[in-house]
Amino acid sequence: MTRILRTAVFALALLLPATAFAAQTQYQLQVDGLACPFCAYGIEKELTRTEGLESIDIDINAGTILVTMADGATMSEAQADRIVKDAGFTLRAFTELPAQN
Amino acid sequence: MFKSGFGFGCLSVFLIGLVGNALAAPETFNTAFPVAKGDFVFREQFLYKRASGDPSSADRELEVLGGISVLGYGVTADLAVFGVLPYLNKNLEVTTTGGQRVTRNTSGIGDARLFGKYTIFKNNFPGGSFRIAPFAGLELPTGDNGDSDSLGALPATLQLGSGSWDPFAGVVATYQTLDYQLDAQAGYQVNTEADNFEFGDEVRFDASLQYRLWPRELTGGVPGFLYGVLESNLIYRGKNQIGGIDDANSGGTTLFIAPGLQYVTKRWILEAIVQLPAVQDLGGTALEDDYTVRAGFRFNF
Image 1: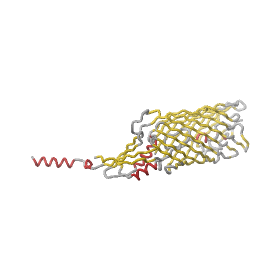
Image 2: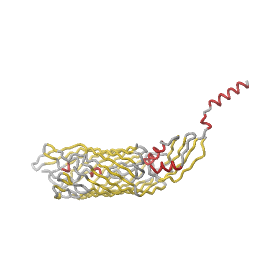
Image 3: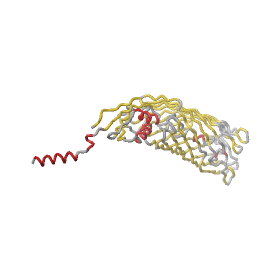
Image 4: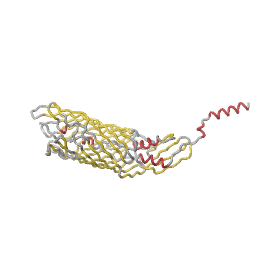
């Protein structure tokens, strides 16, 4: 009975997605000059070209962009600054948020 | 037999302010906002113009129906280049000196425009921006200026193109917040001679207010914005010259007031506006405008 139980626990552990143990990195970009929906697209388009990008969530009222990177991928402040500048705006703040498990 | 001054001058009247813009922007002229580096903006604007205020006995009625295509490209964050190509159908009804009512018509590609716009001042702040951007370009003689019908050559002002290479330049300033946007523009176009005809130079001052009507409150994300738009266009045109001599029935000053709507999302904009002449102080028997309706879309890619 004990052997069956051990086998079942082992099999369950194998079925758990590996990502459950990995960490995604999130960044919050505070952007100055972001004041209408059409503006947001220039930044969004450039961000989507970033390798390892998982998702983008723009809050136009707060002027913030929440960037979620895939497991193991990161974004540097210089990279974010270039992307925002190329779209014609200004990066006021770049914050790495606590890891999301 | 036909009056040469139709009061609407050359194609630049339709096109001088019509450019691709990266952001919410005026509908009848330019904005200082950029096209993001490496991005394209396509804009299509359809127009219907009617002019029938004829001080002469010719009882002229002019209708212009057209589509104006604009492609903009962001070379850098501050420099954008644009190409503008109109397709127009012009229809003129006029009573001849013999009392006969005749219709003259032409349609096809008009004069294209190429120009660049560069941001020389930029102040981005939380939830807004202020920018100043000069622009300069050239109107190319791509439209036919030698069209004719059974009555002979069409008047120069009814032709699709001017036949001339016409430089233009100006400056535009934009102040934008989440709630509203203000734009102001000054522009000048030098019209040169072609085939013994020269349109008068054009000076214009434009202003625009776009006010967010919906959503009233911003709660997060990137919702579509519905703007109420109010614009004005003060346009002065010098007299046309035929064979080096001023045409008294041309040129003058027009002030348009233009209410409109604009719906803006991340990828596209839908917009419509009506230009109504509030003041028309035109030379001689130049034809006065009734109204111009513009409607179209912009697409960001």
